[in-house]
Image (cartoon, rainbow, N blue to C red; front, side, top):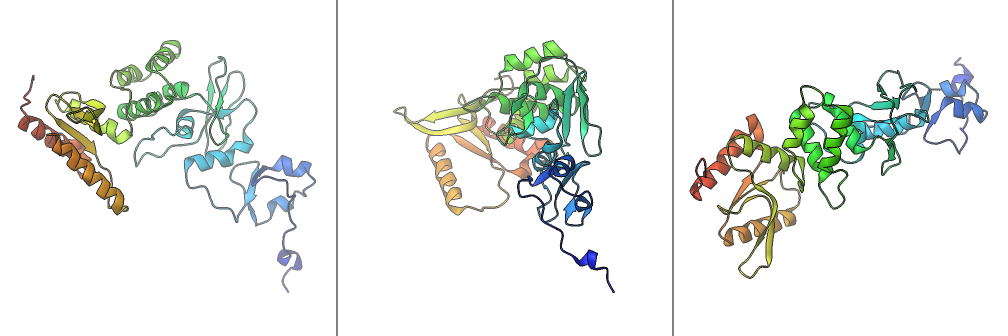
Length: 312
């Protein structure tokens, strides 16, 4: 005969327990320790429990949200976790962001598997709350922190993001001041990144295309330049534009057309640009492979047709 205790359905947990809860929290509500070891619960981190019926976190931010109940009052998410929480672009695959939790000295950082703990220098806290209620390091400080982790172009793309948009999350002066206060890392990689950071950038792909063009020996393009017709009415905002030569380059990262109406609108927009006497260079994902050689060649050829030459 099977053990009747094993077949018994687990008793319900208190209804006011959150989806992810601390073991100590459940114990304080009178939950028996044996109940917290039943097979209907899993432990995402030491000292936490959640129902096996809930989806396993797929993104690093979902993992951070699941870890949040374990944060001590002096701990917060830092480094790339903090940047991702404000929407900053992460390094591209195969890089995988990790979960970073920090505390300022003399407080202690967590030391458990699956979490990168940091004990930061003693300084005034600048923790803010993300849109989903996670305590995070401010973007300016988090950007400097990932200087020890990320490649140069990833740092540039993240800084471009922080400086852009209707409500920028940082200014270049704030980033520069943070480096002055806390120091640079890895042979000055943060200062080198700031040299190539620009305001007004809309996407990390736009950043990577701009960097490829300038490093490929082409002139630096205008960012999000407004093309107007003969009477001054706006025709289109161009991602990367060379007004002197009437050439523009735009990154179209679509792998396949999922929205025919949007594609039709884009095609009409491209026609409108060409009707103004401009050459529109559409850069696809395939052009950005192998160091973006084909992307640079396509834009260089368009500029040469328009009368550009090295040194112009």
